[in-house]
Image (cartoon, rainbow, N blue to C red; front, side, top):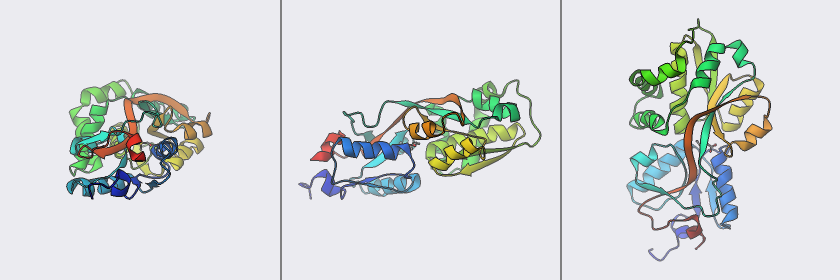
Length: 267
Ligand SMILES: C[SH](C)CC(=O)O
């Protein structure tokens, strides 16, 4: 009923994603910082979170999800981040390309492409929206690469093609990384690599690059979101720097909800 608190309206649940995501660690930090002791962070997956969001949004029902930018959901729905006055979700960050030690010697061409790889949240958004609207990740990546030959050539100009070397790139099934990893996979395939995209959880993605079973990943949310992984494997990977700037993490709600801050959950 209308007099119910926001907690009562959503059964004191925040709909999260895979437990290994740094976003989940930040949300647990927020639950502690804002003393939301009655609240539960529901673990699941990126896909389950967006399915729950669609179900609630289509019926204009209240829902609170863990969200991030870039993400297609901000183009598909009218959403807002809850203000985070205590800074539990940190500042805007970047996504880094992470290579296994030795990649530069073993596969210099792939190393150089990854080192050059850099695009914007708008670029990533185009691929994500294509996939959201039903295109396969492979086809969405292929279209973007074709339509952005100038940007791709900045990554590949002067790099010799190769003859079928195997390249294994790990990623987590976050909508942003499904987009970026398929684009890089397509670019490396066009350069002659036999590319495998290996979908794993966040922990095994970092472990795989550290133990060399993965050649690279381009999903390093740094400096804070993946700080636990980066410090655990310090020295066992090479950080090639940011491939995208200006990410954001937080709690996200449909704009039809009349709350504006995480503080409001404390009612
Ligand atoms: C969910 S964001 C794409 C990354 C993270 O939170 O680990």
